[in-house]
Length: 333
Ligand code: ATP
Image (cartoon, rainbow, N blue to C red; front, top):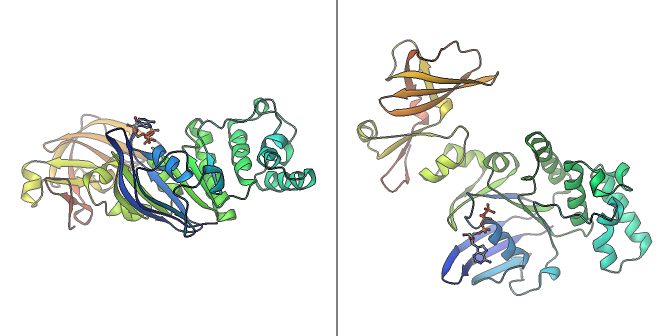
């Protein structure tokens, strides 16, 4: 287990700055998720920490040791990529044991370590199988096992779930959370999937165009985003934004209200609206509405009996109204 400290870390490719100087502490044993849109610099950040890319400025410290110019292999970190890249001709036992074999460890030690890791990951019954005989989830666990077998100081995970289908992805998300709870090894995961970030992270780092927008616990960011980008990036369906006279009346350039905080009634409320489309998911429904404030989305209980075309009233919960200035910064609630 290790603490990873980034001090003023930045990266330029030619004249293009893809990561602005960044300070970040990844506490020992914690699970930190870096989330942001495609191209915002997530993979570059991981590659800098792993030592696969030269930094343009700043330092990387692992447990207080400056590793900025240390070779990747000597940093004691394990990287798990989105394409699980297992060796197709080796079985699970050989795949997991490969790093130890390369390190010249004796065969009995390799066998014992592989056995321990495989049972930890629930792969005990698949040791003799080749990757083509495994499910996507099993392949992913083998990739993690191959990293785990070297007892890394920390895991760096680059979109490890993105190649899986939706159901498997949800299962593996849970498995990753369980694995972290069992191992308490420091984990840094990057993803563009905000659900992955919300459910896995103890701490989220929201990255946008090479800059950190906000860092904090998932629910803290969800309830108190520091700007419009973070407010709109976290949450699904996304936050409603309202500009114009209604926002000005409340002393803001824009108002933000999450779908679950927009009350929909037949009795008079604040704004009239019309139901355009209802997405009924069973336990809950998403109502897509037109109103004088523009198009809005409300999240309702699945039992709500509204119909498309119906006129309704909309009232935001005052305690959950976010206000933003013209630069997109959150104003005090
Ligand atoms: P995605 O979610 O799509 O994988 P990302 O957030 O991981 O994106 P990066 O892969 O870190 O983003 O890339 C950040 C930016 O740096 C992109 O604009 C990319 O084109 C650029 N970039 C990455 N690697 C290089 C390179 N070797 N040379 C030049 N530009 C690069």
